Every structure is written in structure tokens, then in C-alpha cells.
Length: 201
Image 1 (cartoon, helix red, strand yellow):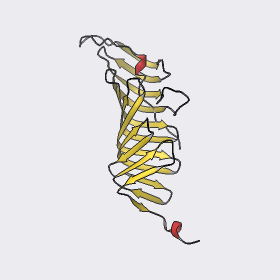
Image 2 (cartoon, rainbow, N blue to C red):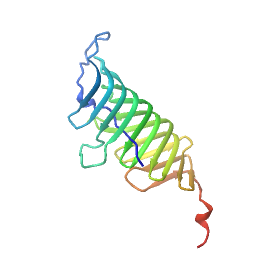
Image 3 (cartoon, rainbow, N blue to C red):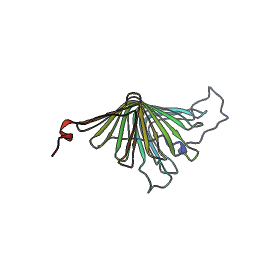
Image 4 (cartoon, rainbow, N blue to C red):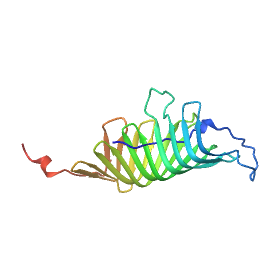
């Protein structure tokens, strides 16, 4: 499995004047921008604009953030998308357009990914919507919504979730996968096992 779970913006790299008046010139505007934060997070964008009020946007984005302060801990969440919008006050970033997100061995593809940061500017939660696909090895999961909680490493897939592994198929109300474990839970589960798997040997 390959691809990318690219994490939210290097918000720590930017300082903003929260007393700025609307209508003022952007605080920052540039092309082919690379930002590096104190905690090692990086953001690259083809075009980026940061307003005085802390709102911003970027096109053709690649962002990489540690999900924990300890760099020897869990792998970073990486996100690639065509567009992004962020609010430095609320620490929320929205990625849209061919979003590919990777964390460790898990890859997620979706239409929109909203990433929330905590007070330490670490990724706290990510919500994916729109034709969500999760890949891990030969496991493929689909649904219309997925919520990743980085502290526990769990992804809850909902809205017609389906998990396929080889010839076997699982459906339910929700399917929960753990990024760092070989573990799956399913609510209101229906499992279809390939006939060859139940033939006596």
C-alpha cells in the first residue's frame, strides 16, 4: 500500500496580527512557498495567501505534520491536495480536490479532508468526506465519511461502509480500523466469506 495521508498546515510557522482590520493587504502572498515550523512540520504550495485576520488559502499543497510531539512516536500524517483553506485562529485546515492522505501503512483518498489541530499545534482529528477510500495492504475500505482520531489511531468509517479483503466482504453501520494495529470492529455487521474459505480440508 502506498499513497499519502498528508497532515495539516504548519500553522506554527505563521504569526498573525489578530487586530488587523479587514480590507488590509495580505500579510503574506507568494508562489512556490515552503514553510517550516518549530516542531518540524512543513508546508509546500504552488501559491499561498495569508490574510491579516489569520485566514488563508493555497493551491497545489503538500503538508507534513507530526501527529505527536515525539518524532520517534507515531508516523506523521501527510496530505496532498489541489486546494486548501485554513484559519490560524481556530487551527482548522480544509483540503479539497483529489485529496490523498497517508499515515504509516494506511492511505486515504477523498473529496474533502478537514484537519483540526490541538493547542500544541498537533493534528488532533481529521474528517474525510466524499467517496472515501482507505487502503492498507490488500484491505480496501469504502464509505462516504471517515473520522481519524490521531491519539488513538482509529478511523471510523460510516455512511454505507464496506471493507473488502481478498474475496471476503464486510458491511455494517460503522467499520472501525486502527492505523497501528491489525484490528477491525464493525457495528450491525454483515460478513460474506468466500465459499472456498469454508470448504473442509
